[in-house]
Length: 190
Ligand SMILES: [Zn+2]
Image 1 (cartoon, rainbow, N blue to C red):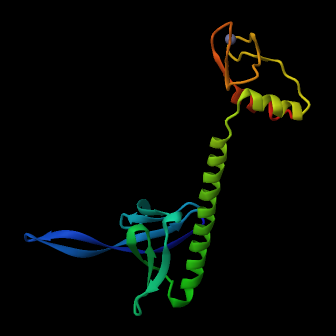
Image 2: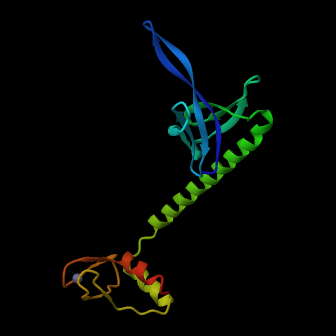
Image 3: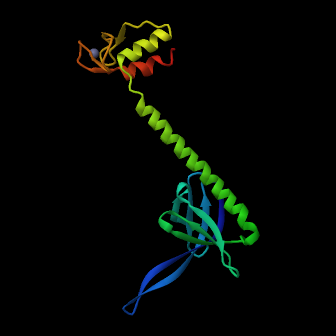
C-alpha cells in the first residue's frame, strides 16, 4: 500500500420503483487505496467503521486519466477502459489538493505500465531462446568448456551429448533430456 484517502465512492444503481426502472445515485463511505498495482476502494461496514472490504478496484495500467469536477462539492473522476468513469469524493481534497493526488496516482500507474512492459519483453526473450545441441556445443566451446557426456537426471547414467537436435533419450531408463536444460545448468559455469 502506498497511500489511502478517506472518502465516498459514488456510483449509480438501477432500482425498481413501483414497476419502473430508475437510476439511483449511491454513495458509500470508505477508503480509496493506492497500491503499487491497483487503485481500490474499501467500503466501511458497521456503525463505527471498524471493518472494511473491497468493493471496487482498477488495475493501475487501466487508468486512462484522472480529473477533478464539481464546484461546490469537488469530486475526483477516474477514467478507465471502455470510457468507464468512476467518481470519488475524497475528504479534504479540493482544487488545491487535487494535483498532488493525481501526480501520485499517475506516477504509480506509469511505473506499473513500465513493469508490465518489462515483464512482457522478458517473456518474449525467454520464448525466443530454444537451445539445440549445436548451439550448446558452440556456446560451450566459446566458454572453453568441452562436455561430451551429461548425466541422466533420472537414473544418473552417463548420456553422450549429440551434435544436433534439441533433445536426447537416456539409453538406460528412456527419459528425455533437453538441450535447454543442460544449457540452464552450464550457463552459470561459463
Ligand atoms: Zn536415465
